[in-house]
Image (cartoon, rainbow, N blue to C red; front, top):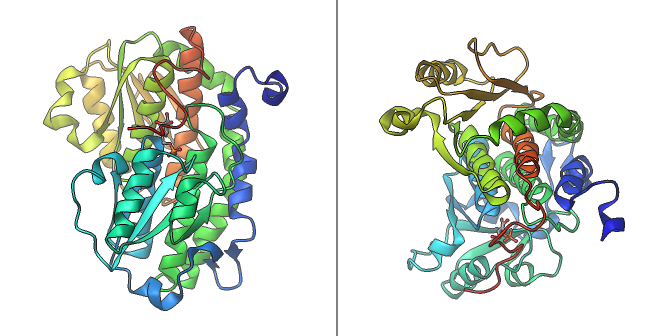
Length: 367
Ligand code: G6P
């Protein structure tokens, strides 16, 4: 095991560092720079069939569900197909209406999560078209679906998912570009997004290089019993994944919230004891997000801001974490990376075994 971990103390950090290569593998051979689109040979769906899709419903559990939320946002925004994500664990029990013109997407690292597998089986029983975004080749979900996209993240050992989640988000972006380019997405937009995808490995490497600074920030955050992670639209799934990671391995209470909804309730909890990690991309919602930072600051809530170069944050923020700017639709993938590193070092600071979090399993294959 020591040999496999290489220079890293834990698999989680090894896998965080592997992300530039992992992303390189998932995009390799799939980007078409001549027609500015993405080829996904395993979908088993021709262009005519793909054009008939009226909705996309993504199903997964845990981090895969959050990756699904990122994916739904991307697909709806880029391909203009209504899309949403739902925990597979809920979907399978609520007797959902199965529609012929909906594309169902099961997303899973292991391909063995029982809740997701049973959701796929239920969909197929009722005639739904299901594809998979799966990491483990030949796994149960990969065998059950009508087609899919392998994620090529390589084996993931850490219970807290990092490189698999990143490759899921990249996989959804590729699916969104593919579906968009046979509909209304222009060659120019296709090219813009493909250039963005190609930049991701270097962008991720630049974030991982900030490890030392992020470790210090994590040490300060870990002192708090309870934290908020806030983001909106594209940033909301980022906040959810950030909160989840911290909960899983540091056992700190972390709650993700839409920044826009703070004023409708949780603002009451903001105090010097309850910091907020705020996702503030340099996009069309920047001014509103900065406004929310002032609201939190006015209640003396410590602010840890994850943002882009050139963004001016209010005076007095506890920390400003800057990630490279990519295309707005792809930014969530990069905004998530520092949160992985923060969760890791928060857990280390608190003396927890990062690779063996209490009460959790890498893959839940039972009810
Ligand atoms: C477990 C793990 C999570 C993971 C989820 C889904 O609950 O602890 O980290 O996100 O399963 O796993 P999957 O293999 O389906 O992606």
